[in-house]
Image 1 (cartoon, rainbow, N blue to C red):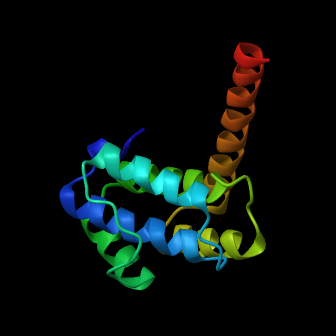
Image 2 (tube, rainbow, N blue to C red):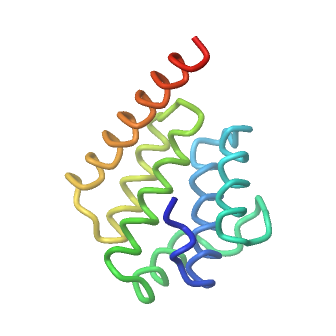
Length: 133
């Protein structure tokens, strides 16, 4: 939704971030790969499933080159990826908390992001139920 606004370097770092996020609970699901595929299509980048940088390197560089708005977009889209398989386990929560802390977002902001994405998922479910029900 927001990824086309990122610079080339931000897009590559975001893709690395997505790969780390998907592997955070040792279960890189088909839904997560599909979401990464969609992100790559939106960003006009080549699809890959192997990270090129560590999480520390990614976070450090994103903070250096990104505005606060960019970081909020990146975190929002990362959270959407984590929720894409309808599972948000303790390992994924821990990963997300670590990431958002390194990027300088508050606990309240991250809780709001997860709540908004869950509401959005519920609305899409209701729409699908109406259309296909």
